[in-house]
Length: 354
Image (tube, rainbow, N blue to C red; front, side):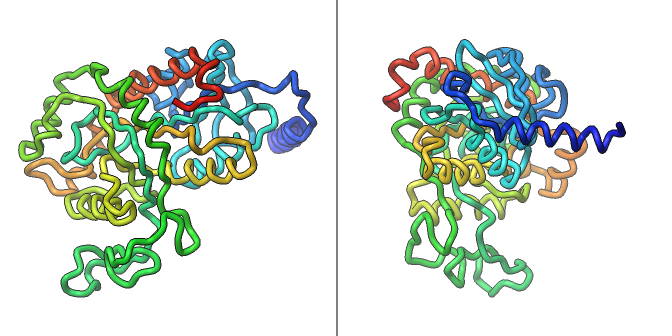
């Protein structure tokens, strides 16, 4: 049997397995789903991606095949915590979460979902390796766009909201408008609860972070040692950099949330996660009100003093994200507090969202 025949046989077997009726006694209970987006090495390697700290330290000892998704799942049967790697980008994230949500092997009806991943941070809001709990996730891709070199004089950006003909044109639009979900509003009470439990968490500082912070002398929050905050989330599949796009991100979130939200973190996936959970909630497979989004800053969205955006991009690509390992550690340190609290107090939180 050659490799192609073997792969086809394996896929057919897994499809039959997933399609077979699942007895109630065989369904795997899940209290919390930890959502990560990439892992480039072994699952238990905390230097190789967002998954490693969870697998090694929570831990997540059991491996569960996940042929309809991006990466195998990991599970802790005592805590009833399930870990997933979605793959990067909104398409991977949405497909992976839908694949998990419709998997008959799991009871996810009361599960809490926590995105625990890294992001770029607005230096006006926080410093590299800080972590932020979001109340709003805003899609940064759903828009019209005119190249800035061809946009009318006086426009601050070439991005135009769907349904409008100029940047930030009023009146305000619903979060679901023009046939798309532009904004995902998380359960504010749950987010506040998570923030209150973690806001005093000590996040380690080191010489690398201090050196990176020194490049932002005009941003008071960017000069602070890492800390926990509440701040909102722009999800876009373009890895953007620079002052002008940072201003666009701030204004885009303010526009779409009608000044309720405040931009802090830039990422790829969270609108995809939000959309999948919205659909799954409509059929009782998940509860969108149990979603938490925690992002930790691996780098700044704005170039440091003395560099251009292109130089920052070159530096990120050649030397790696400036707070990469620290942000991986911090998102686990903060997120695991909430995961363990929810799991350990399940008789309370199963039926009552904190």
